[in-house]
Image 1 (tube, rainbow, N blue to C red):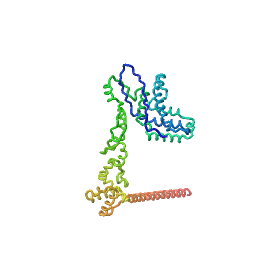
Image 2: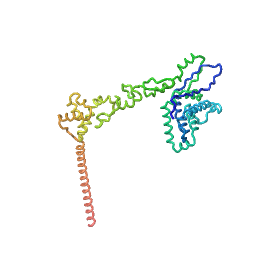
Image 3: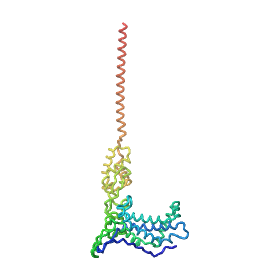
Image 4: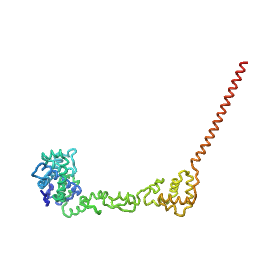
Length: 389
């Protein structure tokens, strides 16, 4: 059975508690974000009630009961919201401990209560045994209602706004101010914190009340803001992360000579300046790779030779390891072989001297010990001879 194309609206009315002779003009503005959020709960709740109420019935489908079920849902929500304040505040004095007090949570609970009341025996069993299949049916029916325009969002928001005003007894999410003339009301509406606004950023369709303008502005994904990395570009907030890691001139990159030892991290736009400022260090890293056996002092002298032999900017123009290595090798071919005094040779000569000195000391110590032993033996022999005489 197809859903009806024409949408019949059921508009509820808030209880009028105005006293006779009081202000006749009342501001009816409300928080549009909360209203929209509440309205979004109606279709899933209605779909759940329709599916659960017709489960196991071969003569009825969710679509066949949708019209009547919608009217029942609206009547139920209207009645529950109107009696909420009396039941929870006036009669009991305070809200029950742990009970929700936000309008969205309250009305969502009312929708769930209605849907639960429509479950038959078959739906309770299937919901327990085949919960995943049941959820799929509900989702499918929600989509079917949206495609057929069964209950348009604008109509749902009208109902949601009335329900919000019924349960928002603290006036935290709607305006309840009253005025004696239409002129006073009109003047107030132009300044009311609940007046509806639309985001002015291109591409953003968000709607909110005036009191949320600053909050939305700080998070709007379509707002154009300066680059977070302080480059000269202005970018949409939603595109900022991609900009910062791809095309931003100030994104941090490794030095082109990172592979040979330069550990600097620099903004992309400063790469050339960095290479020019640190050419001496980069030359030293290149030479360390070419002359692995050379000492640091030898390499530093070679760097000075290369800088003197190179023409103006010849070395500074090299922007990567390959190009600088090629220029260094060309210059070294003109300068001739590097005179190397390796640390290993120096260490070997020093170790040899130390070893020779240690050997000499050992020999002297042995000679001295042998001399003492000979003298002691001689003295002992002489003493023995005298004793025998």
